Image (cartoon, rainbow, N blue to C red; front, top):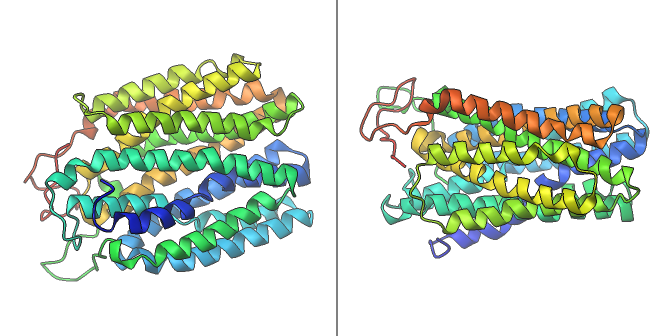
Length: 420
């Protein structure tokens, strides 16, 4: 996979550019909690950022499919950097909560969608997307490996990001974590945008009979099911971030937060490595159901643990269960939507994670304020249980379309959908 022509040119800048994603929420929580003294308020501001990102990320993906990634990424990176700077200034000045919300909205709306853009580039160079010049044979067989590789890369950032943000916020200055996030976004995002040779060719909208329809990826039933399922994964990320922070404060060791969250993310990364090396004989739909069942079971004991070693071990187990669900969900996208809507579809899933994270940060923050960190840990359990129930009820909608059949609901009849 790594020997694919052009792959290395976008991997390194893509890694640098996505690093801030793991630092943003925890950076906001640490700064706002420091200036207001409330996890509930800190969680609400972080949630506003997550909701804003969830709403605007799919539109960013749709624009990237139509106009190209660079055209969307450059102004987005600049806006995000300016918005984070405004949020930091307002928080340190003791601005009212509504002012923090006003800065949080553009901060979330402008988060660069590097992960979906990198996944779209992998799909283009491996799967023969329009303008890629690739065939769909051997390259397409590597798409699940690429999905696993991206999950490992994402989780490696979640190993480093929270630890870095926490260390900077507690050891340097409460705003240092967010300052580093903005700097990495600016530098990494611009470097990634400069890699024009590997970005998928935009598919412009052309009027007439020969035009490819511009239907949203969300019109595909399977994508809608995955969006709901990924809300559950977001609830794990958000609930763990706030609850681990509150737990570390309760035991009088704030620095343990970054370590505990890093162990949780390391489990996800290790599971991603294993998933990428296996030749699966079980279909992706069944793997998705098993992954969510394991995740629900693993999160069911978090609220009852009050020991750092035990919480670290259970957090590792939760992380091990996330990667199979994430990887399989992203892999299913290639069999559910045409290449012209691929980046948008990936951003719907990323946005769902952000939305679930935002809701979980708010709920866990309120519960931690009122009842302690243990109550906050019930949020990941509730989110994953609801996601599992949705998948069980609607699993038939995740079946890939047969090759050569006409795609319904406004999707292009010219793009046969591959079968996993």
